[in-house]
Amino acid sequence: MNRPDIVEEARRWLGTPYLHQAARCQAGADCLGLVRGVWRSALGHEPEAVPAYSMDWSEPQGAERLWQAASRHLLPKALSDEELGDVILFRMRAGSVAKHLGIVSGLSERASFIHAYSGRGVVESPLSQPWRRRIVARFAFPMEAS
Figure 1: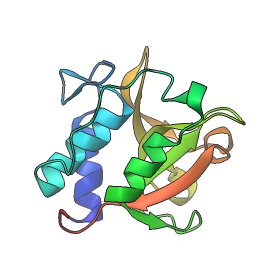
Figure 2: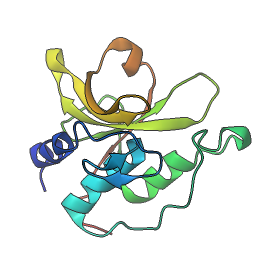
Figure 3: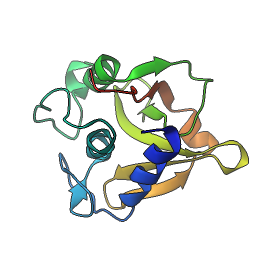
């Protein structure tokens, strides 16, 4: 699956209701569930079982579990190397763990990303400066499953 196909697949998920720990298009998804669903469409079976996780994403322990999992299965990129279909990881507050994911769906003056969050479901949002300053890592989907 190429980068435009990744974006097209992510857009199929638009309107999916938010449901913590879910990963089913039009049934329910959280931000990780969206990325997992796009992975399944692009690459087939998920590379590892996802353990149960709380909405605080291991904040009390300070463990970067989401970042570590992304690093195991996605291809790390430089923050400045922005391309369609990238998976971006956000730290929502200074001093907290990174716990939100999105998929880049537009570039340049039309910069945008697709993500899921509570109360909104899967949406496409402008990649505005408030969002950009929260990005802590960037990844690409591998061309084939590991």
